[in-house]
Image 1 (tube, rainbow over the protein chains, first blue to last red):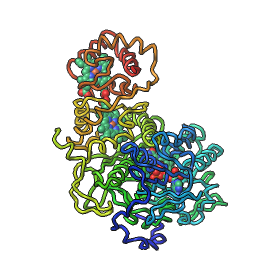
Image 2 (image 1 turned 120 degrees about the vertical axis):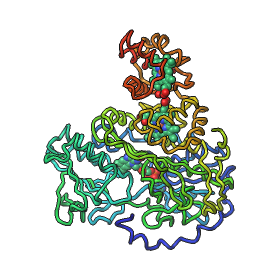
Image 3 (image 1 turned 135 degrees about the vertical axis):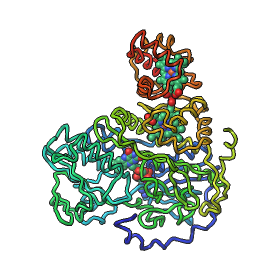
Length: 431
Length: 198
Ligand SMILES: Cc1cc2nc3c(=O)[nH]c(=O)nc-3n(C[C@H](O)[C@H](O)[C@H](O)COP(=O)(O)OP(=O)(O)OC[C@H]3O[C@@H](n4cnc5c(N)ncnc54)[C@H](O)[C@@H]3O)c2cc1C
């Protein structure tokens, strides 16, 4: 599953083993119901914080988040299309504070799993009984030669929302009609599997109405992608896909789409056989767990292995890792999955602080994609815990994709339901 | 149906430090754990912020269970609920029905056409109130209309009138009477009225 960076990160994977059978040490810092420190206030961390407080207000919950405001990636493709403001993706932490969560804005630089203390860049120390680490992803810089953090200031990834989203939108707006927008789609596994293709759809929607002579080329490291038939159907319906005049061209790895290097100065993507120039380029690179997961010794390969019923780390007891950074494969790396895992983790942490067994988990994922005017579709999954395999298993016969032959009316309804999903899940996460 | 809700709350396994798992015999998930999985789409504790996805808090258990089973079997049309409902057993559904029934239907108010809503009130009284009592707040066997999301109510009417969603005999008689007296457009003021009830 880890295509690009496996070798690099397997080194050192053995370093922090063997601790996982230790029984929790005596508590360090006693609040009435125990102390929980949460690293990261995205969908995973913020949901866990709210649901712990909701279940047991005697538990002291401190959430440490680097940024004052959170910008959701979900619906950020609508910002690129000019259909939404960046501001509409912004969420603060007042709702969490109101739920009794102590919110601290600082960068966590260390987690000592033996002493049970979290340390921040600002020099603060936070003792915990249980720690929850939800750092999301980092880009695997270096996996694609030429694409560095510095390069991203000119060729954005826009795979973390905020300034990167604003930059890509600005470039698309400034691009002359007839320009070529080149997107590099990442290798599996990565955040939001249908995301790159939704992005291509919505940029095409923008071009169709404002720059109709422009083209989109997707250079892919893969030969297949999420919701592919549904996207291709929508592209055919709206953007001429499959004809000589298609606005969107998708080049799979098998047809030479796999990029080998990024030429930042020349504004081009190199593949094995070709050099493709773009007026605007968007590179979505390979990804791995957020840095703090590596620094704290929680990772194996690119992600943090966990017990799937409790999201407790398999490497360091007392620490739970969830959301995009964990290895909860079978569930995609999505906001819905992060929210769902936040609730499972909250219930486990509340029980474990009381010395009780963690309750049986239940998980759901859904993800809407908007692909054109009045046209959306979804994927859904309902999951249970398979203890034998320590796996999150899809309930047989459930879930799956919107049907290919759904009516236009249903595609239109799914746009309304996608917008509702955004409002409801953000209320559930940040209050 | 009621037998094992309590038994479902705890797994049989005892975790040591949480890191290792002694046995594989886990019980079914509890009601709240199951119900929490719905909040991402339906809102915290089942009260939706709209614009379209319906609130499922406070629904009567009968109506809730019937809805889920009808989604599951395909008897009731849906964009996504068939795929979701198939993930839950009858026991799971019964447990969630009980859970959501105890949650309040939040009515922060949504935008409706005030003139339409005014006109709809009298029509609702004549054609709908006999089954959708107390301005649509009582949902025994029929779903809650009061404060429900307007687009959702409109979609539901489209599904009833196109015969994709089964219409109970007496309900159908009222619909036919309304259409005969005032035409299909007459549903709109009624739906605006119900959506606007606080
Ligand atoms: C274009 C796009 C579209 C998407 N669309 C959808 C969609 O429609 N539906 C869906 O379900 N998902 C969607 N996603 C995926 C979704 O955004 C992610 O899966 C989700 O954000 C994961 O949540 P998380 O909490 O694990 O991580 P994140 O959202 O990345 O949150 C991590 C947080 O931790 C903080 N942090 C990290 N390290 C530290 C540290 N050391 N100290 C302090 N704070 C730290 C970060 O600042 C951040 O706020 C989309 C993603 C993209 C890119």
